Image (cartoon, rainbow, N blue to C red):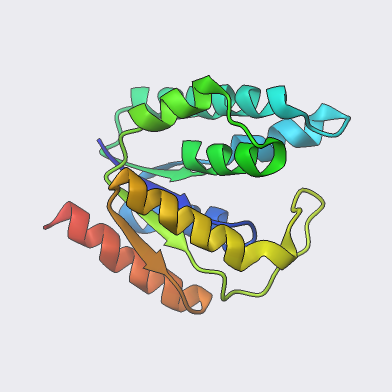
Length: 171
């Protein structure tokens, strides 16, 4: 199974692109578990909630993996949770760190911040988009992970992402 992770700061079109790519390539995609979790929480999230979100995200991945699709698009992965944890709490649960090290992703698509911010009650940092983008890029480089930066309009992003995924499928 080939796994493509769509990652990056808030409000950069990750969910939209994950769904579009899955549709284009006939692959499966795993939505962001955090959104559902936070909507049902009924209180502000706390540090332990991020590990619970990580566990829920992994459960969704594993369920989708069992279906055997050859191509899986991940909308949110452990790098998102690591950065979120470290920024919000200056630490990251060992479980998240461990899962990030184990995470086997064939390509990360790092979403640029050139799309307009879309307000959402779950989004927190419209003024820190460049800060977070730089952090994601630095982490991917430190991990030695294969990644492609995705910029432009929604249509340009989709075209660029399709090309990047095609390179993984047919090197």
